[in-house]
Length: 267
Image 1 (cartoon, helix red, strand yellow):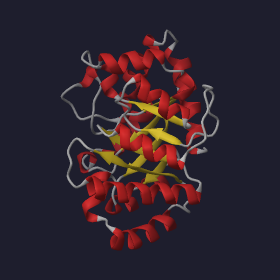
Image 2 (cartoon, one colour; image 1 turned 90 degrees about the vertical axis):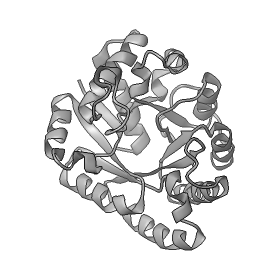
Image 3 (cartoon, rainbow, N blue to C red; image 1 turned 135 degrees about the horizontal axis):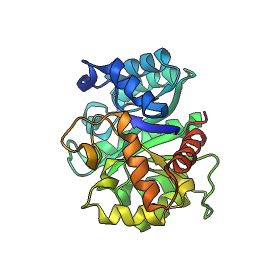
């Protein structure tokens, strides 16, 4: 079985004690490709170092909306210069995660909107795929994405996706809107939770061609590991749960979503 974890945070301090063992467990579980997500400037270098150290790991770097109050117009000039430089690295494959988060509201909508749009501009200029964080902000997220990615398509096949909506948590209508503008949807541990009825209904209706798998490690463990630190090896449980709901053999489903990830990150 060949799995691709399109969203993990292995540089997180929660892995300091056993990072190497965690990576080995992931490979033993069938994870053949992993995207390390660096969500703030102080994590970018660590993500790139992981990608340089392990052939099967790649990096995506950006600034999460929780940091929007720290990165205004003045700070953006400095950070964007470093971001541009790192994005030239052959193993830095995307910009993100970045986006909007109206759940925790650690800053204002105006601060988030500035940082969101600046990273969208950079992605469009550099023709890089993006990793979008959206929590309870679908309306404003879709408004911006429609502006920056106006082309629409109604076919399931998406050989060159614009990006991925990380840890998708919206309605079927939201899913259709994102897909229409060229995005894939990322599915994580919550799809295995008994309470996630709406998400499970979306999964059943989703074309496999628009799905990728994520762990968001060390967060959001699947139901089989609730209460534990999540890690990429647990991606197999997520793949099995979704494959069952799609009535596909898990190895076949895993291969299909891995191909979607290769298309997304141009691997």
